[in-house]
Length: 347
Image (cartoon, rainbow, N blue to C red; front, side):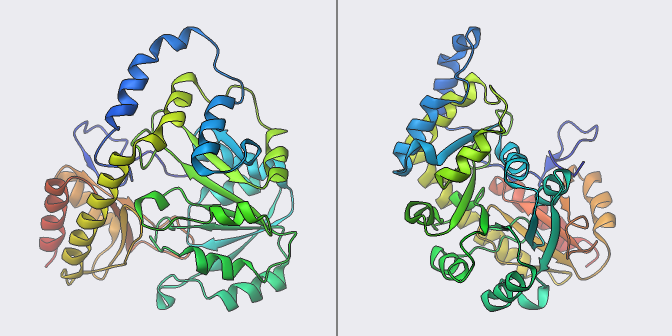
């Protein structure tokens, strides 16, 4: 099993920078709806979450047949792999390692297109097109903004990158973190229906609801229908359905979050850039990838945990090694505490 869920040690007060959850907490409106909806637990929820699907479809201006709900975005990664294969899949690396685990579990042949630090972990569309032409995959997996590098691509870039590909290729675009940016994402590709596109969306990160497990996918109706054919009933509980139907009504919360994450994220980036013992990479999400120029992340983690803080080591990501780590944006005081430690560590 891959590493997820943050710090799991004995320190219950650990300041955990490995978890990329909105530091502003649960939206007040969603909290009220969840409390008011507690009595719904005496009833079975809708099997597929049809009402929440209809509300999200209205919010996105797509048809309900373009939407599928999941027990977190993670369920839909595995459901896509189970229902759309087996075949050959190309994964743009380094990235979230559950794509590969899900694909291999259901018999897919997996190949990698590994981006390097020398290229700033940025896709060269011509190079990717050449790899796709040579490997002839049935599916291509891309995370945008990417986890863990934070690399963000605009919708025009994604459109131009996908345009030369064969129409039978299924593009799996994970946009779990895109709400933290000002980019609108690739929803227009689904509406235009020129390529086979499936877009993954997480509602737990931006809306601080990881324990509720709720996400959705939006894609061509044919892809959604195939996935529904393999989906177990009742994978989304009643409270998660309440939240899913209400998150896009939280417009003030969304504006506040973007303003905070972008402002505080830039402050953290600037401060990290001044630390001589590490390198930090620009990010379009609520986290930053860093590389130590002195020492190993394992040594850093040991020292950091003694001070009541933890981070995400990145040696398990393809294309990275034990000099890389990822930190989430937290409350300002917490970020300053980490920055002070990093500035003084082995300097």
